[in-house]
Image: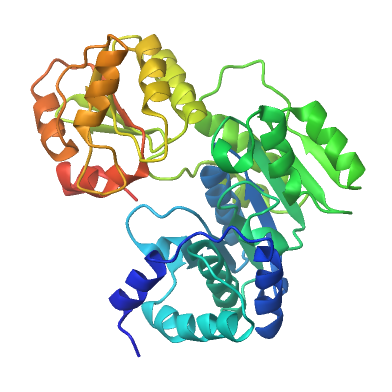
Length: 392
């Protein structure tokens, strides 16, 4: 049997599958495995922004209410095991090394190609079934209709928000992307839709599918992104009954590195792993409202994203831009970002890898610094601050 590290390397090497048989493959492999995705109640969550927080809060509420809860999320920040958890404990390495070959052999024997997304999703279904969870809170990897997870039959589905992201896969307009994400709506089921979605369109799509759509109204009060996501979670538990104690407990939870404040030697940092234009614009506005206009922004950009869009957005909200990166090969190098800044006539301040940038910022005046743009910074951010800074 291959080691855990060798198995992970093989999983990471799997390529995307653009095949008309993709969902047929997932359905058939799950049938061979005894349909593990039907062994528990599912809450299925998609959205451009906010799905990570709503996933965590929903699972926390259910767990506090006495239920055994599994989660399947994407992406992970540091450890692969974050993607599949039961009662917030990561999937065991032994389970992965034992079951990955079994899963791959089924794909091969049935004559189907297979991808990272498909393999991780089905491994998650298997693990949640084998751990006999009561609820599975499952985060869509990308989109809705074509996502591997979309073979589930959810008791509640959720669309947190709709913005222009993954346009090469989902469509070029808000309406096209909303229609793709609306694939999580199922007949005779409930779908919660957040305030930052095209609600009229989603209500129409829901009616055509005989799905009961429950909108979360826009609030007249100014809320930051975590508070707004909590309103979506709260609406879920108008459908699923839980105790007020469990609900209150879950609503005060938030994902690490989502609008997370750190104070180090009297300097304030906000860490947010938002990695699309919608989330970055929202965090910039929240920071300016909550912390004032004197805001520094340290930006990293993942390959496959549009640095020009991110840099232009930040220039509208901050006079001080720092460019950064880490050793992760999925991040653009600083030189590439500097070239884009030059083309936009934007002059960034100190630009260094994150492990060098944070110590340099400590010597500057006490502005609030937002570090954002990619989840691939997290490991080196953790290494750059004192160990007792984070509670994750």
